[in-house]
Length: 112
Picture 1: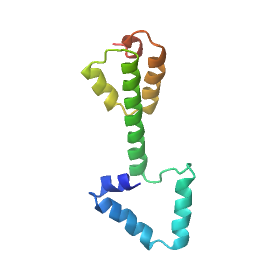
Picture 2 (picture 1 turned 45 degrees about the horizontal axis):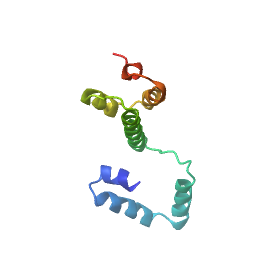
Picture 3 (picture 1 turned 180 degrees about the horizontal axis):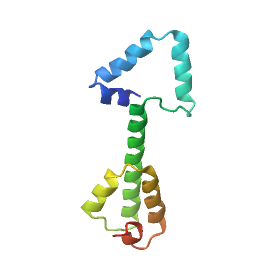
């Protein structure tokens, strides 16, 4: 979460914000929050955090797709790289990833 905080508040203020919030919470509340965050099932509550987390996932999927395309020997133009990197639709990125695993030509994945 510090990276979320530093994107809202310039570093080091973002980390200071998290530290301050944690410091003023009662011990029971801190323990409860820490247990929620370590279960692996935590869902972000604020729209900002959900959007930020989703953006990070999209960036990771785009990077994975570009890596697959490179390993498979596809020639990826700068325009196509920009299109892939700009995509924030996780479903679309996953369709492209699935298609990239079996396609023989780049236009099978990205029709004109």
